[in-house]
Each structure stands twice: as C-alpha cells, then as structure tokens.
Length: 121
Image (cartoon, rainbow, N blue to C red; front, top):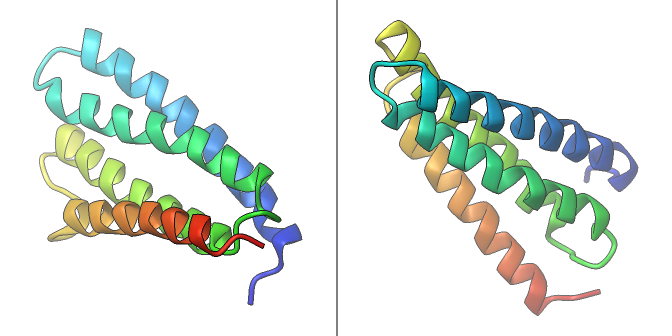
C-alpha cells in the first residue's frame, strides 16, 4: 500500500504540471495553426484533472479510494494528452491505443472517486 504522505505531494506536482500544460495547450490550439482539435482536447483533459488531483490530495483522509483514483487520473491524463500532443507535433502517437487506454484510466479514476463516496471513512 502506498503511504498517503508520499502520494499527496505527487498529486500536487501533477496538478501543477497538468494545469500548466492545459493552459499552454489551449494557447497552441488558439494560436498554433494547423489542427487545433488535438491540443484543445488535450488541454481540456489536463485542465479537468488538475483540480481533481488537488481535491483528492486535500481530501485524502476522507476518501478511501483517493490514492487509486488519483493514480488512475495521473496515468490516464498523461497517456491521453501525451498521445494527442505527440500526434499533433510529430505525426504519430505514443503507441497504439494510448489515448483510449488513457481515457479508460481517467474514467476508472472517476468511478473510484464515486466508489469512495460510498465508502467514506
């Protein structure tokens, strides 16, 4: 089992990185030319999951599934947004099915949040 004391800073680091990436990708989508849909989608996922990670880090002691939910969101957002960014800038993704795998991980993270609401400490 992962210690909460080790995971909370990780959640905050990724929240900051996703927030930064989300704003930067929104700027690329607005001003970068080319296909704006890919960076816009990556931006939306980063900006949606950054505050979720902050909330999970802050509420770690109240939600039994916070560690699982946060880790799924980190992996999922990284895969999903990373695949779209790679596709936009290099013409190929991270690996086959990286974006859908990331999407499923993010959805499972949100289901873990919902399950945690039913299993409050």
